[in-house]
Image (tube, rainbow, N blue to C red; front, side, top):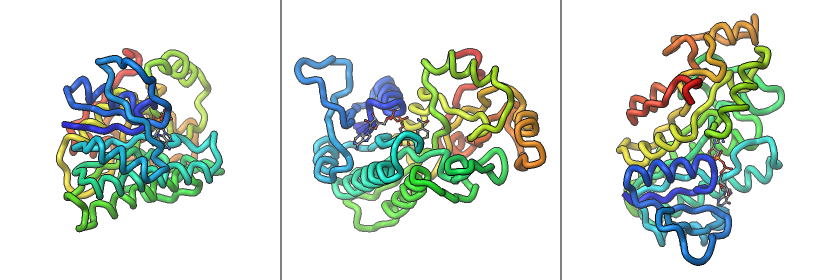
Length: 291
Ligand SMILES: NC(=O)c1ccc[n+]([C@@H]2O[C@H](COP(=O)([O-])OP(=O)(O)OC[C@H]3O[C@@H](n4cnc5c(N)ncnc54)[C@H](O)[C@@H]3O)[C@@H](O)[C@H]2O)c1
């Protein structure tokens, strides 16, 4: 399949390009950084620079590649280091332009990165707690700041895209809500610090997703047929501390602890990935220590 990956120089984009190339797909990478002009590495995916907040560049890009699927990972990936206006003015136009380009050029499949922050409790002041654990796709969405809001509005955009009947070809879509994306370099220090720290409230209840496993899910979502627009969470089955979730939650939150529903395993993360497993046959790895 011909797959166009946006944000290809970022954590999630890089992992998606790698997964798609390893599976033998014809991948084009795009990001906003300048290309390295001149002879290129023949094993690297072809690269096209485009600023996706510019509609003309986005249509040119998608029209030139004419992919079978777009995996859209470009954007500002967290709420903490940019102004809310910058986050809003980047993430929403970029996704809207990609969705419009997909619609006009005739791309049948769009996969976009939403976020675990979409339900709203994790980001905003104060940080709040989910209604229940593990959180799943049925949890209410109550965004408070620009980043989570762009993710919720982005999911609505894809609802609208697949609902339309005037698309050049019928379009189906998937929004993936990744937990905290961790890469190989982060495993040593970050995990050690998390595990050694005293148990205290955690914005996402010690949950994470491995970048390579997420790249694999993005590829599965791009290449599997599902109707309409599906939303799925992406997280590892086990939590960052490798301890029973019920104990962590009881120690960190005491009487305020959210209700704990069925857990797949005692040391579960705080997010259920049952839907991603069911729709896409995704099997994220467990056992942090092995990485
Ligand atoms: N990193 C996480 O923990 C995390 C968690 C949940 C969701 N997400 C989502 O996953 C996606 C990818 O995150 P990431 O961690 O790979 O981020 P990243 O910052 O590593 O990569 C994002 C890429 O998007 C590119 N980009 C930004 N604005 C652009 C524009 N206007 N035009 C073209 N390219 C542009 C950047 O240059 C960068 O290479 C984002 O949508 C993010 O919100 C990330």
